[in-house]
Image 1: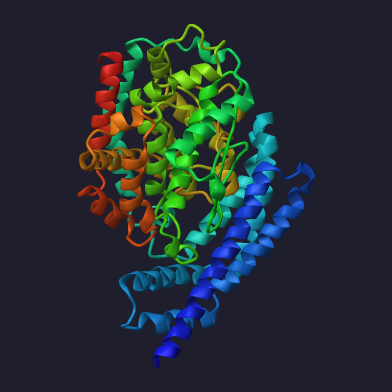
Image 2: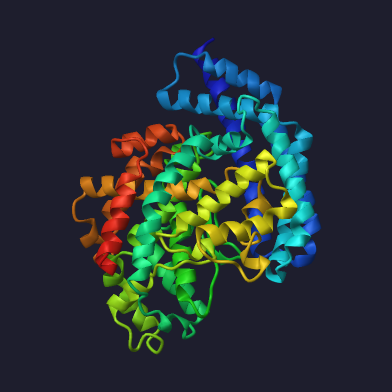
Length: 503
């Protein structure tokens, strides 16, 4: 084949990748609109649109001619390492997509749109019973999808590998066991030491001022509002609608300003990752985050290791008090820092502190495994949820709203592999931060000056820009010099809460 033919072949392949990326972006746009501005009466039509689009994208992703193009490209010796990786990732995605029947893809997409709309009404009403038939169908479709990958004997392994490639349910369970063994006694000791003052957080904080403050902080972090925006939704999320369109959402509580602030910082962490991917990878198979765990590591890093640090409040408390002078008239910087690091047993995962958060994830992980294995029926999920919370956190939700209706994941996605990435992200957040600090001594002083340039530059160079160029395991080892390890995370938590609570 001549050079010209090779060039035309590559151009055809990259054009196909861009088309797939654009179809995915349009799907994300429909989902973003559904979660932010869609009128309640428009849900049925939106579900139909999402089903149609999912079918079209699946058809293009599994097109036989596209498969031939990938086979031809895989046999070329003139590709750069980056191009060869693009082809390898694309072939992997193609092989997975071709196993799933188009009808199943359409059915799943249309069903999940309907399920999400029903959830937005059932959750505030505390009506889990309304969602049982939706969840039963979701579970059935989830098991059907997993059945097309018989190399995974356990459906949970299939879904974990989809979101955190290379991990298995057994490996995740081992990490969780190590964390539970270390964090339960630490949390017990901290709680016994006494709660800090938090009364001032319930004094009523103007919504628009909260949003403006959070947006000011993430501008300092480096979030580019020329390539994104923030809106309100039921459950905060980040989404890429196009190569240079990375949006975030948050939610506001008037009597708890930390809800909006830390949701904004969290989602901005996801967005910094997506905005930091090398431009030449956008519109290709490498143009996204490499795994759920690595992605979550960035949201938790910017939310917790930066946003809940003493240095952060040294930098921003003056601005915070100027924004809410009446509410914070008798509050000190130290009290604010301690308030946002309160440790308590709580019912809500997204509101949980760093020490108890992983117990929420472990609970969901175990419920998912039981649903997929058939040990737990959907109709019994809410009761099982309450029993697990009483066992793991010593609490029982007063209504279904804060029970099995709490998270959107099972109502807008498949069942399986939806939650472990959050805890893997917690572990990796400390591992990445420790490596960044080792390479850039004095990051705490930078944060206290509102200077995030060195931290963001290190993360961009070692994590963000690579997209899916490396596997998750390879990326972690290249960036930190070791495989995933809970040691830096546990060290960070023990030192931080030991200093705060004297335990």
